[in-house]
Length: 169
Image 1 (tube, helix red, strand yellow):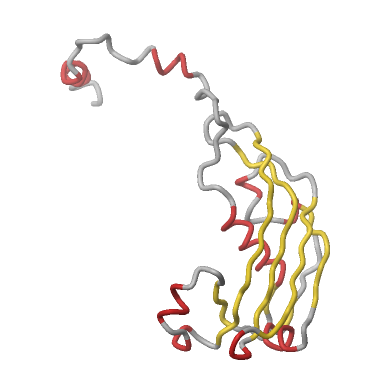
Image 2 (cartoon, one colour):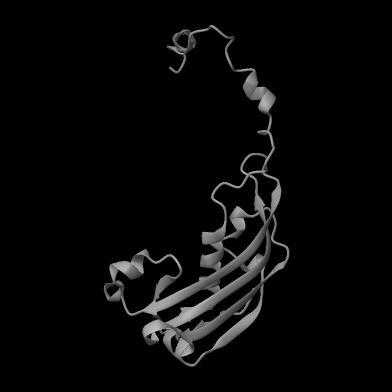
């Protein structure tokens, strides 16, 4: 288990702080059920700076590879991770203008005295993962078994339902 890293987000950004290292994939507890394997490491870098209007920002970089689970065959798919993001720290959402909310070049994060950096990194990884990863060409498991249930062409689906009536009791 990797060590928990906690920072004061605003102070870290204002001081130009820098954190970097390796995060074992096996330590991504909330992500593991989406993966086919837990081998390897991800390299991360979190850098603090002041952005426009002297707003504190965190620059986040995550690189590596994961093996995500195909939603059809359940085998692993190599998924390259290359995350680059700017998180602008705000006191609350009311500080933001409509124009800033619509700006897709950065995301906003509520400033925290105790920000768990590893949890933040895992959040960004989860947001980056595909919703339903699949191999480009892969069949459903036991696809032949499902094809046996398809009625012959020309058969009314209602005749099949009629045959099931009364069997559920």
